[in-house]
Image (cartoon, helix red, strand yellow):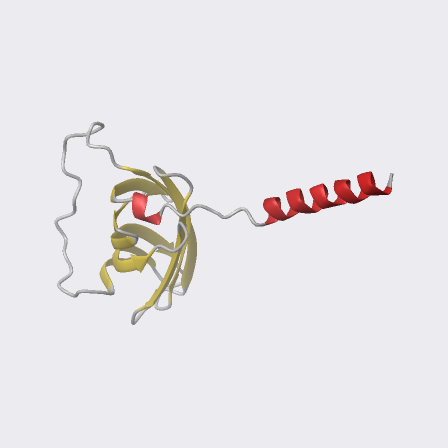
Length: 162
């Protein structure tokens, strides 16, 4: 009877350790391509993944502040994907960005961006969803013709309404 009790405890300990130490699979290098989606504000967004790096992330947002309303088109570059998630922070003269996201599957991503506009005294949290673009779905080119000459950082096109 004592041997049975001992064997059962070893078996339970072995199963428990296997469940606790199951490695998670990172598919960061399998996400290459153009991703297209939309924000909770109804704006389009796109980003490009290449070998575990978001080389360009383009998003539009609207901030309803105390002193003005600001609509921004923003491009972030060179965001590292680590274990299927990414986080990026950027601060410029008037605006703070806190972008985060995760790749839920090989074709679905989601996240949020908190944006604070100091000049307008406004803050918004924007949720977003995106899917990996498939050329079979649409033959048109979806690349933006707006470019940033800088190799890193952020390109911003702002429209303020007072």
